[in-house]
Image (cartoon, rainbow, N blue to C red; front, side, top):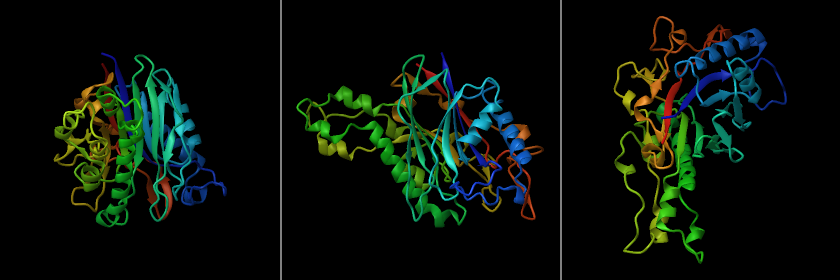
Length: 355
């Protein structure tokens, strides 16, 4: 059975070493004056590429979501350091106040881009990072896949103090998923209404969310607002008719909300297991980076199936020398950057089976 190799990584402040007054990024700390030199930048690229090249037993991912990148150029520089590079880059300059973006890299030998990617800006008091929507088609079997790359608001000012921001983004992300999985309401008033089979075909589309959600799989933003669970109880049923009619009543259909499967449940409850280390928390290792899939993708309804037992937190010894529990990120001393490190997040990897 053929497989598609998937990965996501928060690459922690992948900024170039130039200072451009016209750049939206507030990268004042990533300048030569603060130790972020061209040499430091090149070392960061080599470190990142070294890890990506080892993913999936050295075969590298076919689909790689990233966040905390400054611009498309840094991704071009990153892919230039990868062996046998055939990655296309889907990227948009976001309006985030720090200028850090979400992006998707995909192998052109595996995927075709079927529509212009859509950056979804969520406005809090200020615009936060985009939810980046990318529509792909698998070349070998024509399966469609919609990917949403996420980087939800930080916990920097306190987990509970900032929770409302992530809930706001979760609601927005849930609505975007519903828009993919549900037919527009205008179809119910057309002379030729959709069939139940057409309604369920839409409901079972392949949707993959990946990202740094800055909340764990059991947090309210994920469970109650995005409606993603580590169980499958709410995924099992297709859409049914209403009171013996051929299709659901429009009023019933409009109330329908998509439930999703969170692929990271296996890592919960394990001591010192997670993707991100935070020393001030009771549980110092957090599972902030996640894969979340639609019902159709989980059950393999439309030519692609999420391989639930293949998810890994990708912990290479080079990223965590002497202690694989903690990823080695950026190092500062006295306000100066002294080592670019790799990232303060471990990557995550997963697999899609072609069925």
